[in-house]
Length: 359
Image 1: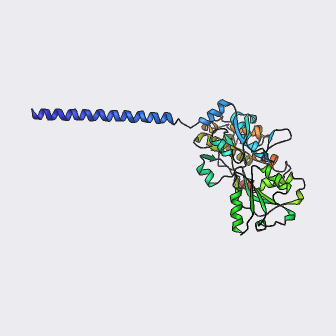
Image 2 (image 1 turned 135 degrees about the vertical axis):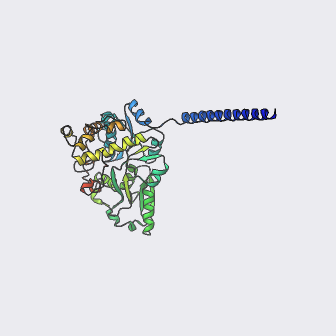
Image 3 (image 1 turned 45 degrees about the vertical axis):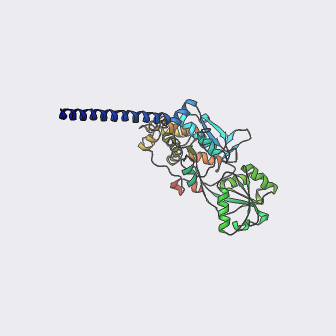
């Protein structure tokens, strides 16, 4: 009798243990389901959202000639604007499917974080802190620049040390103030740093004599110099204060959107390397070069792999041209600025522009 009761005790105990295990598993599964519901999958969410909307929203500048500004017709123009249109051309086959939304140095990151814009294309420097702490992702750099200083020639400013005691303007929400402060400290000079809301305000104050000098990316200084009343009265110091890789930005958390935007930029660079332009892209559609055929979507499924049509590169080039065409039209020989490619030349010409292989 005792042996039977003991046996029955163990049978019941094992059954209870089994039930507890099953119920715990069910609870864990249910909890997991709740967690999944609270955190929906992000993969592909942004691209789907953009496609359903029928346009991509680009955060841009409106006061930086050559990069992002409103022309005499009130239209958005400039290098960064054209980069923004490139995304629309590749995704929709229509560069006009890009809606430009003005943002400032102060509001640009918040606009991206809150979903007000899909992509930031506005003379923005990639830095360690920005790349690691804002929940954002920097895609390939589109313009390599460096910070410089403009001053009046009559101020006799030849080096950073000569800024000692002078008033220097910087734009709010940028990296320029910290860079300037560190460089002045390094040469043991002290200047009165005055912060302005935007570059228009800086230039107005500078031309009115409220400040003696101002600092920004060198390309920005060059573009502003060309539009000043008497360019010959001003000088841009030869000293470069910092490295400024100007880079479009997207919100983090969606690998597909990051890949889509990243490879659209690389496609602009690779198209230039192949010699494919807006005017000759149709001729390349008969090419027998395997690399070119794959690049243009004539073979393989590269576009499909990231959620785009396989011929997204063809649409891209027909819409805005290649990297060289965008550069020359807005900043280079076809513009009033006449900027040399310099470090923004292809790697094959001694520059930094380089695309990984499309394979």
